[in-house]
Image 1 (cartoon, rainbow, N blue to C red):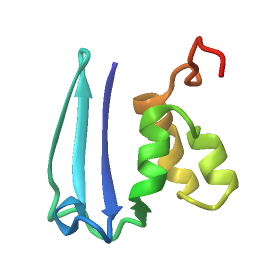
Image 2 (spheres, rainbow, N blue to C red):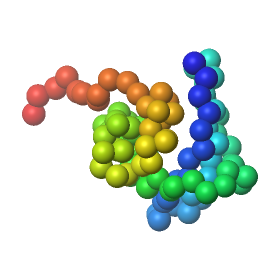
Image 3 (cartoon, one colour):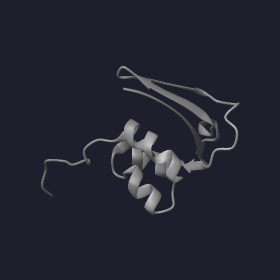
Image 4 (cartoon, rainbow, N blue to C red):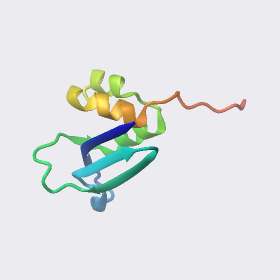
Length: 91
C-alpha cells in the first residue's frame, strides 16, 4: 500500500505541531515532512487527528460530524483504518 496526503494540523497547545505536513506511507513505513507548497488545506484539530490515529474515530464518522473534508476521508481511512480500540479488562 502506498498513500500520500497533506494534513494541516491545528494545535493550540503545541504550535510546532501546526501544519501543513506531507504524510507518505509506503511498504509499512510512514514519513512526515513539512509541506510548505501544499496550498490551502482545511486544518484538522489535533483532537480529531488523535482520535483518528487511535482508532477511536473513523474517517467516515469524522466527515459525518463535520470535522474533516469528505475529500480527505479516503486517504485518512487508509492510513488510520483498523479495528476499533478495546481493552480486555473489567472495572
